[in-house]
Length: 174
Image (cartoon, rainbow, N blue to C red; front, top):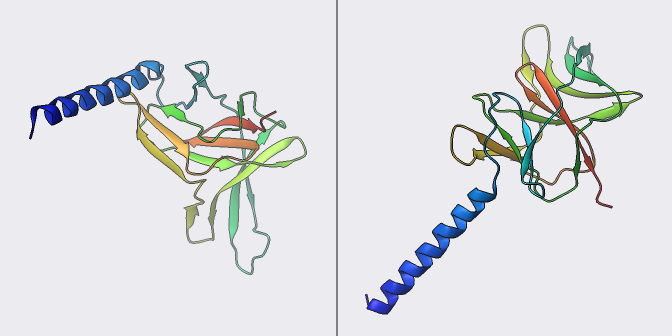
């Protein structure tokens, strides 16, 4: 390999390494709270804690059923979450936990929001998968980040960690 090619390769390596370091430097530090999701606000360069909302379980029958099937839903009071996120191509959340979060879209009914998370019958039950997400390592430490695989439509959403629900809303760009 010629000396010029080696020099060009070294320069390219330095540029790539510095751009990765610059991206990490712009990210806020990972959260110090375990099992709580944070919205990564890239414009403000900060993590915003999602509100944890109380919920009630509602066990009901599916719309069409000839068996003893049931669906369990989480019902949250109120029309909307306090945390609003503008519609964008990639929404990122950061968390520090060993449990993988599940993301659901609420349906609204009156002054409550609801999503189904489990289905079953008298013999067994299975979780209803949430919206598809991709999880990856966040900058340093033990924190992770996740984002929906597809752009989220305007509406209300819930993130489930264990037995807690954290909420946010996506607003259309104005």
